[in-house]
Image 1 (cartoon, helix red, strand yellow):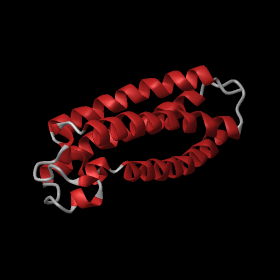
Image 2 (spheres, one colour):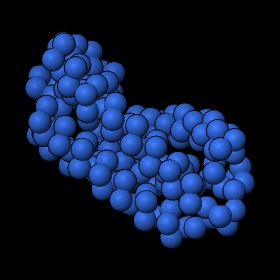
Image 3 (spheres, helix red, strand yellow):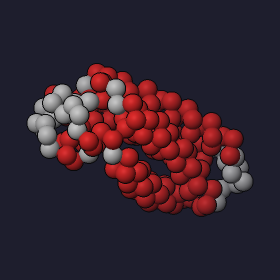
Length: 160
């Protein structure tokens, strides 16, 4: 049986961690997340420098790995192992993180408030900083990608 309290707690803990890392990257240098900005903004600035690319990967790779591995590890503690449980648990945790990202980071901070630290120099006033649809589509794409990943992980988990 799915433990919804555990799923919620894991989702919220990972959401806090996710928000902390993303906001830290934006404050340090919003260009580190340039690939996550709308295309019109990306095209208005030079590509990432080699230093920015290296730092993005150095932070992003272990960060993404944690977001994938943590919910999977918690499925190891289920007494009853079924494909649906080992799929739904990490998928629902990810959905919580994605919803917090969409609503808090993307829609409230990025689109509604648009503080100076999210604005890439040279792009001030661009209308795509208020593009709620762009973030919704990114959320939906991420949900599909993570859904496929969770199917693969659940299959692997069933073999363990």
